[in-house]
Image (cartoon, rainbow, N blue to C red):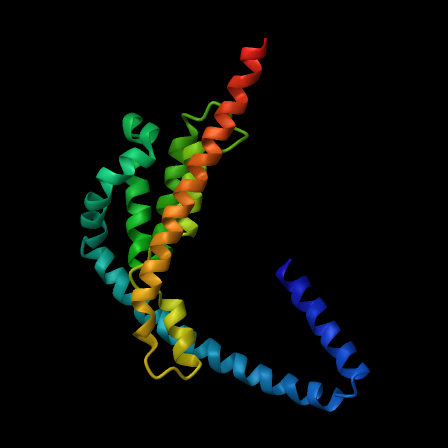
Length: 202
């Protein structure tokens, strides 16, 4: 889908460039854009390798497990069924902790394992239950200690101080997590209410 969108954008650029009489500018922008894309990619690759290595070292040192213990009292209220059954709860804590440290590669296997264990207690196997949806949302809108990709993009764009955004990023990501939890809770309550209401009418 993303490839189709970019393809349409490229075709529209060529069309409007020709209509507006700026075909030479479009033609010169193609090689310039390709060169900048390679430059940004190499910069991102270096930064991602650096921070992924640092975060993976922290993960191997047991930092993820320690942070999991910190998040556990809070997550027991977000995932009550997983906490009481014990199925997938440890993996959920590890997923949130790995995302917090920016180790996305380590978080993905934990999340998949948690989803698989939670599926065993899902009354509707063909549909994700409330806690599975919440885990998917928190894995996407997670609080990250070091936003490596964003720092790499700022560095590639020539930022003098790429780390100047750290505190605003922490604040906004915290609000995003809070809003995501509020929204998923609201939708879960609404779905349960819609399931109960027809039975009362009968």
